[in-house]
Each structure stands twice: as C-alpha cells, then as structure tokens.
Length: 169
Image 1 (spheres, rainbow, N blue to C red):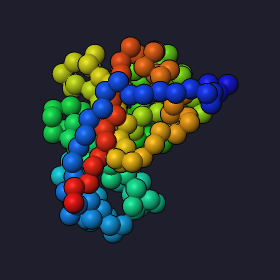
Image 2 (cartoon, rainbow, N blue to C red):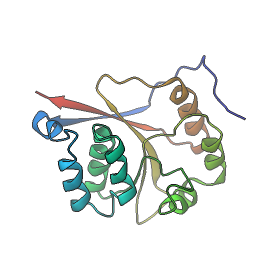
Image 3 (cartoon, rainbow, N blue to C red):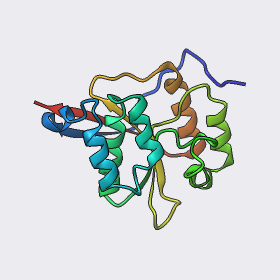
Image 4 (cartoon, one colour):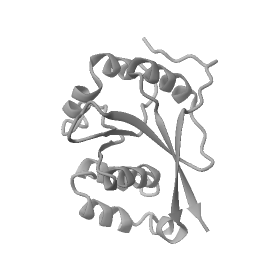
C-alpha cells in the first residue's frame, strides 16, 4: 500500500545554503577523479557501495556527497543515499533502522518514493539525528517527496533539513 497522494504541498522548515567553487564542481566531470579522491579521503563516510553509484551514474551524486562531507566535517556521521535498502545496503541498514525506528522504516518502505538523501546523526548520542535532502539551487522536489517528507516530519517530530548547493561563479 503506497502513501502517495498528489495534492500535497510542503515547504521545508530548515534550509541551508552551501556555496561550492565552480572549479570544484567542474572536477566532478564523469571521470570519477573527484569521487575517487573523496572516497579515499573519507572512507568511513563514502563506502564502496556509494562509490559504485558513480560508476553507473558518473555525473550524479555530487550534491549529496558534498552535503555529506559538510556534515561529516562538522562532526556528524552520515548515511548517504540508498541507506534504506536492506539488501543493497546491509553495511548501514542496521544503523539506519536502529536510529529511525520501525515506524519510520515501515513508512519509507511503503512510500512509493525515495526518502531524503542523507541520514545525519551524532555519533556520540544517536538520539540527535535528522534527515537532509541535497538539492541544486534550482532543483525542485518531486511529487513523491512532497508527500513523503511531511509524513516523515510528522512521524519523527524532526524537520528535514534541505541543503541547497549553490555553484559560485
């Protein structure tokens, strides 16, 4: 049973802007040079399964990884994309489930839409956690996100933080 409805509007309660130097963004060029550098620099954050996504989609994932590195640099731990897929992410799925709880896991499993890109948590006290969605400056939310995100906020009593990645000229 899917929870998708199409007449929902949602506005984020928390938004952050991250500015990215244009030269850095250009290095995410489809050859995986920057992806490889980041994987090697942040092996506890960017796992092999995350890196494999860039093989299939070499121009995607920059915004998610950049936001994750920003949170990581601030002392948080972060689960990046696909963390909610039990079979595909057996390395982090137990962490995800322990943090968010069964009710949230069930809601995401039946959502018909992908949950927020990142699950951010304090490694010293897992009670402090939140979802974050990375978007380019002009990227819009999907219909599925407009339905799922308010539901997740209601279930968790936590705002989903939206991170807008802005490329500097």
